[in-house]
Length: 231
Picture 1: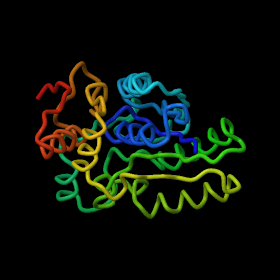
Picture 2 (picture 1 turned 120 degrees about the horizontal axis):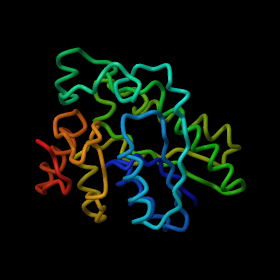
Picture 3 (picture 1 turned 180 degrees about the vertical axis):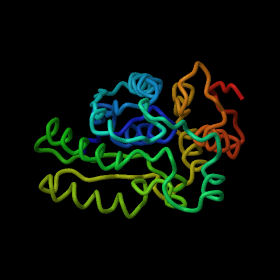
């Protein structure tokens, strides 16, 4: 079995990568990252670092033009900035539904690109596309394209469209972030190489939704997050 792991350079995708390498061997794993007009290059730099650490081939695709009409706060051309509140607080204040950092159908595009890459690199072999979506992402319908239902539907579509050769695997989909970190610690994931913050400074801001959730996940496991924070 071959695997293409979607890699953002963050905690979840890097944990996924460690799981794939542990199960399948690094020679059978490829990482796939994306330029999509994000606010900074830190996540792509981290994705390269973790791919180098695990000794796997790393591919980068550019989806920037597709999102050029979006005003999502994660994008460099946006008039908005990411909210410095936890996702739970945002949902409590605004109700359930998408948050400002939802990038339009991003995961659908990335999974489709992964399927195309799988069929190009391994045209006659079975291949899984691994995605690090977890339960906290889908909570409150904040990111609909991280949900179990979405991933099940994409798995079916990808499998049909690739003559049964490519499938989707979302091993973290029913775990919360603390459980993801627990698995990563077990596998000795190099979390010091990862980047989660929506800002692109020298240190993580410590105040955006993803920083708050990341810090809480490490604290829940009784360990200190190995990266540095401004606050």
